[in-house]
Each structure stands twice: as structure tokens, then as C-alpha cells.
Length: 234
Image (tube, rainbow, N blue to C red; front, side, top):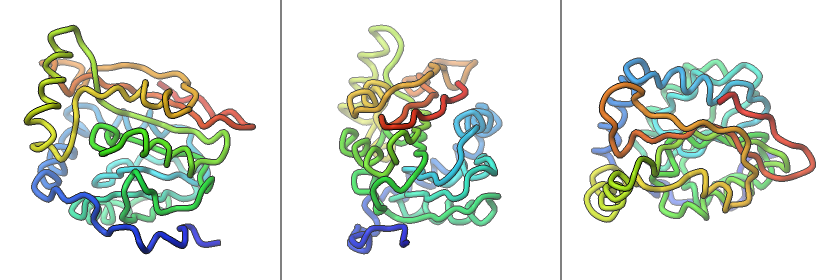
């Protein structure tokens, strides 16, 4: 049975185009693996997953090396060409099968109820339409399918919240590939109809200055259905 829907070929090849930011992000994300402890976060994000997984907004594919052997296949959707090319290189080194494909989070080029799990990692901050993107995640998950998420967003006191709001309305998205610092990923998942499992709020980096991007959340949710998804290790 083909993985992608008949309309997949009609999906825009490059729905997102931020080549300068993509190159910058690729450099800092690699250094963050050790300097900010992102490698350990990825291990916790993906621990215990199994079956077929869709990763939405895979970036340069740094998650691929952290998928457990119980995962039978990863379909990684990445709209930005520079990041997608880097993701393909990382997919070739992964220990589980990874298929990297173009596509937008708001129109995933895959069939409904085709996956056991979905991964969203530092992506909800930059999608153009969060409710639509999460509706797509829900569509492609089987009933009871699990969502693992690691996102940054709203946090801190009143001054920080006002700062995040001001950045989102002005310079931050144009300079950072459409990223927003003041979104609320947990509320967005709940509003999209997912059931929230355990999640943990944390600062990145854990030590050092607290930035508008520092407020993160790591956890699990699942699509309601006949089988409850597994809890995340958070």
C-alpha cells in the first residue's frame, strides 16, 4: 500500500524558503547537542516509541540518530530545502529507516491514520497555522496514536511575556524563519483535541541567561481512540 496520498504530488515542493536562516540554524543546532544538552532531550523525547512514526518539521534531521530500534519507519516532513538536504544526509546515517519528504505541516502528504506516533520538535513555533497543522497531525495518527513534543514558547513573568509578545509582532519572525517566541504549545495541543499526558517545563539552557526562547516543554499527548497512547518519559 503506498504511503503517500494520491494528491501528494501536487504539494508545493518548497512551501517554506529561508535559506539564510536554515544555514544559521543548522550550525547552532549541532553545537546545541552538547553545549545545551539537546542530545539528552532528544533521547527523552523519543524513548519508547515503536512502529511507524511521522516527524513534522524534521529540520536538519538531528532527531534521527536518537530513534530507538523499536521504530520500524520514520517519515520526516521538512518544507525548507536547505534543511531537507541536511536531513537526507542524516537519514542515511540513521539506524532506523528514515524517508525524508517535502511538505507543509498544514497539508501533510500522507494518508490518514497511517502512523502509530508523531513527533513535533521545535516546529510549532514557526508553522503558519498551528490549529491546521495539529489537525493534520491528528488526521494522520491512528486512534490512540501518541504525540511526542518538545517546543519552546510562552513563559516567565509579566515583563517576559510582554517582551515575547513585542518580539512576535515585530522583528523576531522575519529574522528567524517565521519563529514565534510567545506561542503556547500545550494549550494548542489541548485545543486541537489531543489528550495531554505527562509533560515537564524546563529552561534551555538550564544554566546561564534566561532568554525569550528559553521556556520549553517536553512531553506527550495522544489522539483519543480505542487505545490509549503510552506515556512519555518527561
